[in-house]
Length: 68
Image (tube, one colour):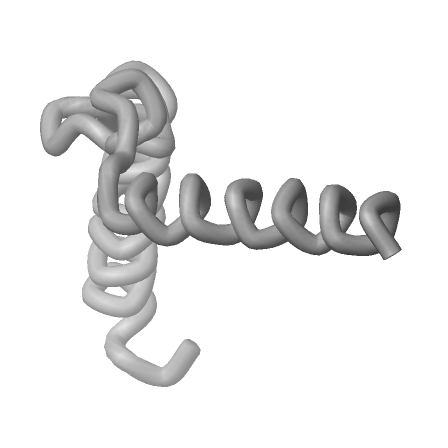
């Protein structure tokens, strides 16, 4: 009977320790607001391609008389 009581007490202590830790998040795992998922060079290249292709399409449509 003493062995199972000791095991039960250990389990209770373990669970109580987890309950007191609840809500405490270390600062290293919290996300910072300044970090972007995409680098500025890749973002700039994407914007350049999108705007460049739209300008190219506008110029091509204007020179062909709007029928292309």
